Image (cartoon, rainbow over the protein chains, first blue to last red):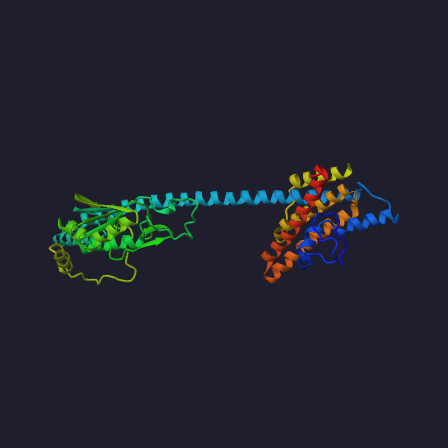
Length: 310
Length: 110
């Protein structure tokens, strides 16, 4: 039977020869044998006079030096690790900001160059009669496809996140919580845009991002992307179309969809605009399709014009 | 006295020399620290119990650190590194606590 525990105050069933907690001997021994048995043995040896007592020797000093070295080194390590993480984060953040600024500047330049090119092209085409016809056709095509800026009467649908959703709570991890209430998702924006097209819009832009036939509305994380450009709320869908467009949109599926969204904490306003200016799409490029060398003049223009009297 | 000088010297050396820990050794550093703390608290308790022995202290310190590192290394090789280090930390943590409790009883008799 086990000897009485050394220097502990755990309850042993005195009297009986079997400890009540004998079944969890692993756990109790953890708490009771916390002192290295070597100390007791060394004390025993000293008591018997086998070895002289040693205190404060160089062995101890060396051991404590090692202890101190270990503690200080790990402290320095932990500190370094923390600060290097923070450093990497700030470095990455500033790099992202720098690159975004460069991107914005490049986009600006691109837009300027594009307008300069189209200006020059227009000037060049104006020299001949056929050229000016081509220029008109080009302008129409550009407007219809989204490659050129357009303006006209229309409407705007504004989606505002009222923030009543629960994920304004900073404690909620946005990756794990599925609390998307109160946030405009890419699906919402897709539906609204499709309904705007269905209501007769000829040109649509979301937050100054013109939509073309090859535009995509997607999401990455919590951000909604249009043509891979992240948008920030509120979302403003602007469209150019006939005067009846607004009532058609509000009375149709788009209106009822927005009514449902209102229950999820997304507010909306639909209003007519006398003059809507939609910018040219920055992301319009064809990768596979090419124009046949002799453009049939007029044919495409006719189709575009037919859309107008819908 | 010479022991205290050793401890202070070690800490100062660690803080100012900033010895670079090789990358392969870094995962074992936290476990080694916990093992070292266990040895230190055990030594303190033995000192208060009046049975302190410097050789036992040094051997238990070195042994603890090495065994803890070896266990974690083995666990890493077997793919259960985090579980084993949790186990080591739990066992050593309980020992540290009960030693600290014994020290507290010695010092404050409570």
